[in-house]
Length: 133
Image (cartoon, rainbow, N blue to C red; front, side):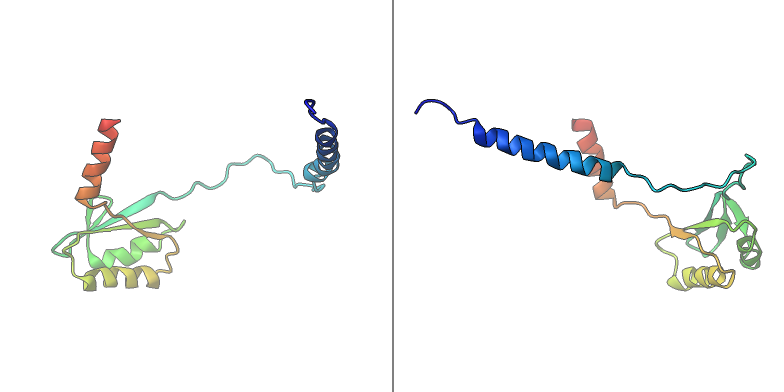
């Protein structure tokens, strides 16, 4: 027999067509929601992220400006609450970082992150990969 039997192919295609006909209305059905209207007033701007640098000697820098230890608590209680990005030198004793974290916790900061850099070997290999492409 040298002819291809098309009947099974047609049967499969009809079954797929029926499945899509039944599935499309279910997928496109939307829940009717009555959304509230606004007057178009601007929302409050998100506070900028503030960088807190901790130098090797324990000195604090708030956005590149020198900062005393007692000023940190007042800056952390700003409204709206700032996002604090801690950037500590790797030679800083953990005790100093722990003091900064305790001050942030006392001020009830909710947005806190640490800034790090990749190891030099990885940064060099990434540069080599980008240059070789």
